[in-house]
Amino acid sequence: MSSTFRCFYVEKNAAGNVTRGVCELPREKLPPGEVLVRVEYSSLNYKDALAAGGHPGVVRSLPHIPGIDAAGVVEESSSPKLQPGQRVVITGYDLGAGHWGGWSEYVRIPADWIVPLPAGLSLEDTMILGTAGFTAAQCVLALETNGIGPAAGEVVVTGATGGVGSLAVKLLAQLGYHVVAVTGKSQLAPQLHAWGAKQVIGRDEVLNTSTKPLLSSRWAAAVDTVGGQTLTTIIRQTKDYGVVAACGLVGGSELPLTVHPFLLRGVILAGIASAALPYDRRLGIWERLCGPWKINGLSILATEVPLTGVEEKVQQILKGEIIGRTVVKL
Ligand code: NDP
Image (cartoon, rainbow, N blue to C red; front, side):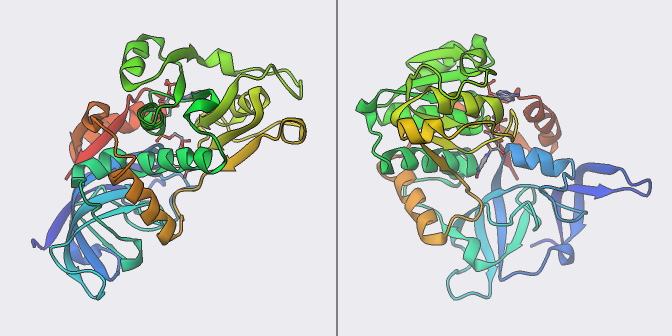
């Protein structure tokens, strides 16, 4: 291994402004940890774009390297659980948040964060999925666990052309669900149909700002990446004993509601929190994603960029302009 490594580095300059860009650092700068992984692929998630701006809600201290996902090969390990040469995947925990992340040729991390590469998936596949796919799969599991099968009716997916949304559309469609995709990009309707959506609707159809406790019911279930008034609307539009998996906040973090959807319709609101999912449940999600829930034609969702291409993609994701998944090749 060379004595230096390339990474996307976020720091504060003397004037107190956050600056960022690709640079080369000495290897001794890597934080301490049991396992050194040579990263082959990382990915771009909405949270990474916030980290790239030094957002204090995501990043604990600067300088920082974003990247909440990484896939690569173990180079050094002081843990008996992992051997040099082993191919591995890391999503979430503190990677790319409180700890230097995957937009880097190397990460040094605790052994407990590492999942062996799931059988039948390539390192690149795992990063097309990344935290987005891992989150979409947890949303689908929440539906299934709460009794919503493909015959239950329409499942609405918001932010459908984004990372989590596109993977949720594809996975649900493949499992036989009737997917209604919500998008602000109506020109991408043909693409959403190709990914498996039965119907494509505009954001305004799931945006009702009235204070009515309940709205006409339509959805058997929902995967919501938007939050705020969109989530409030969807919960009020959900049918008796329907399930709403809430995972995102690109449209807002408030949730103005009454308890009526829960008490009169038995709606279940399932919270999804990927980063700290306990290890055994984490393995269960990956076992599904490489087995019965293996997503066909994953690569049609992906755009690959080198480290030097990340800046442009960060700006796009913050404007809600990303389509599908962005994979970072180290
Ligand atoms: P992306 O940017 O890839 O996707 C978000 C999509 O939401 C956009 O592509 C756009 O899709 C839509 N959108 C953007 N802005 C708005 C808006 N103001 N109102 C309505 N729709 C909007 O992000 P990710 O898929 O990476 O993440 C989505 C959300 O999920 C984020 O809030 C992220 O933090 C969260 N998340 C949470 C996780 C958890 O563990 N709970 C894990 C992973 C992500 P379109 O144009 O098609 O409408």
